[in-house]
Image: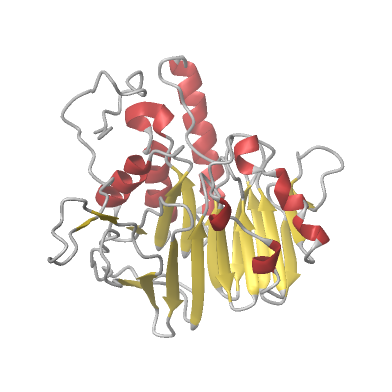
Length: 330
C-alpha cells in the first residue's frame, strides 16, 4: 500500500508533563491495532500487541544499571501467549545472557543473527532471509554495517524495524578519509533494500561517541526510508543526545520520539483511517522541593534533561574529547 505523503498533524508531546498527551500521525497502515512500546536500556525495547510480545536486544547494563523493578521477569512474560526474543548480534550491549534463562519459565522463540556463535539457541537469520513465525508475525533480516543483522517484523500489519548496529559508523579522529568513504558506501548499500519497505516504527542508533556526526546515519535513514515514527537508541545513557535529536529532527514524513528513562512506555493506536495516536503511558519522575511551606501546595520540580547547550564546551565534561558540547547540571 502506498504511503500518503501528506503532512502529519504536528503536536508537541511534552514528556515532562503530568498530562497524558496525544499525537496523531498519518500512516500507511489501514488496520486497527494497538501497541505498547517499552524502553529498557541502550538498544533494548519490547513491543507488545494483545498477547504477542517482541523483545529486541535486551540488556541490563555493564554494571546492571537497569533497575530490578524495570526488568523483564518471567511473571511478565507469562502474560503473553507468544514471546519472540530478537538478538541482532553478539556484542554484549545487545545481548544479555539472562534472556536465555527465560525459556525455563516460558515458551520463547529466539531469533538470532546467523553469525552468532555455534550453539546459540534460536532461529538463525542472515541478510535476505525471511521467516513466518506465526500467522501474526513475519520477519525479514537485513544487513548491518557491524556484526549481525537488522530486523523488520510485520506484527499483524504493523511494520517494526530494529536496526541493531546498522549505522554510518565512522570515527573522525581515528579514521582515514578512505575509511570514512568506505563506511559511507557500506551504509548506503545496506539501507537501499530497506528503503523499499514501508515501516511504521523504527528504532535507530544515535551514538554520541561520534561527535557532531552522531546523527548522520539516523538522518540518512529517515530521508531514504521515511518511517512514520523513529525512536532513537544506542545513545549510551546520554539522554540529552536522544532528546535533542528528537526535538530537531522530526520532519514531514517522520515523527521522532525519545524514550530515555528506564521502563518508559508509549502506547500506539493504529487506526483504520490511517493514523497513529501516540500516548505517553509512563508518568514523569518528579522531585518535591524541600523549600515548600507545609501550608502550601507542593512545589513540583520536573527534571529537565532535554536541553542541550550548543554554545560551547565544558571542560568538566567527560565527553569533551568529542565535538558535541552538552550542558551538564552536575
